[in-house]
Length: 329
View 1 (cartoon, helix red, strand yellow):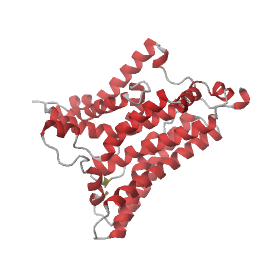
View 2 (spheres, helix red, strand yellow):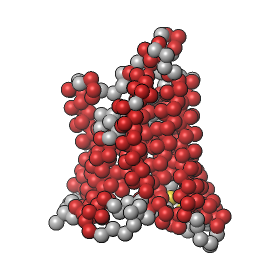
View 3 (cartoon, rainbow, N blue to C red):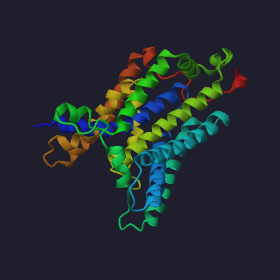
View 4 (cartoon, rainbow, N blue to C red):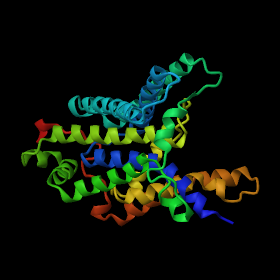
């Protein structure tokens, strides 16, 4: 029989990196910036946290880790690394007005390269016999259930996660409130719809694009940190992150640019990502691969439906992917 009680927590754990990535990308796209560098930014966020945790563990040696520092150091390192990636993207696309699609794809390649370079360097420093680095002592503080020991199906399904899982939900709800209930959120959406009109109304277009993209990048970077420190038990392996960054971007389309909807949608995508493990395949590899395609198939179907409906509220920001030239206003 299908064991939903054990399936749901694993779906949540698979979905949390997607939730971080999609929330960050929604904030970015609401300003009119199409950041296809999210997979690379999540990768950099993950390796930055690994670097901070690695050197902290090395400095402590065999002594006991301070729980606060064990969490705070990789957390801040992840934010700084992803912030630098966001600043680089903004400098290229907002200040230098480079093509956003090309820049985003280049940053994904760059981010993966940076992660593999530093990850490989750390593996060599540890003289590990396997191509990975384990930070189990730090991972414990990220994986520890925020509400302590839980019993029963309710506790297993809703109270058995580390603090980053609940932080992802809080950030998504906060982003939704910000975009729909605050004046700065209204200004941000105005910039994404028509930067020239927003500029004429006295809104600083450059500042909003920089802030939303950099904050969105830091949020997305936490998805990489969660994957390494919580989901992967503190084990870093080059190229292990897979296609989760691209799934996060697909989730933006699936939720029609609504951060609050990303909460349940990320769990759905996380469940679809691991569905092949729980459904019987009879040993047929073709059927297993078909199950793995479900997240992408559903995204394509949603995109087709949204395109056919042509409702304005279901469309992306009007200026998405377009550089703003003030001289043309």
